[in-house]
Image (cartoon, rainbow, N blue to C red; front, side, top):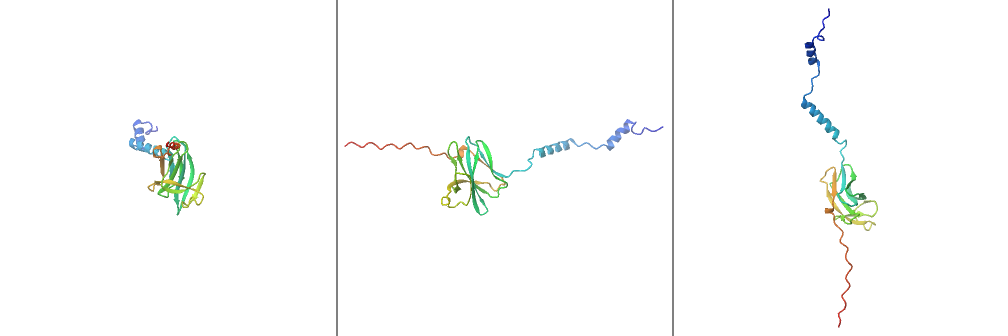
Length: 182
């Protein structure tokens, strides 16, 4: 008669399963693996390194940017940014530390300006050089400085609080007083 071996013996079968089976992972190891898989799934595929501007106002705004490219100043415009939205002005790593912005509020008037004068014009533009704007047929516009602290990516938030409002419309001058009677 043939011996049933461990297949016929439940005790031997259990020992064989314990001996040849793959050990189960520790519960903490399984949790760590699940967390790692979740982190990889949520991690962005490519980190974005850009110069972005967010318009945190209720108005549409126009943006011009100035920056140094090699030894030459370059100004570009206009980006139209809707109310409560963001726009990427420059794509990729930021090679410079300082960038300059000028923005105008199309709906309420006012602007975001500064003391760094660069060249602009009314229509879409890319202008090389920041000197002699008027003599070259451009407008001379005051930009405000943005210090990116040499980060590879930066976002500027424009709000109504940091906007300079246009001066109120001056009332018509009063007529001169009537002449005095002699």
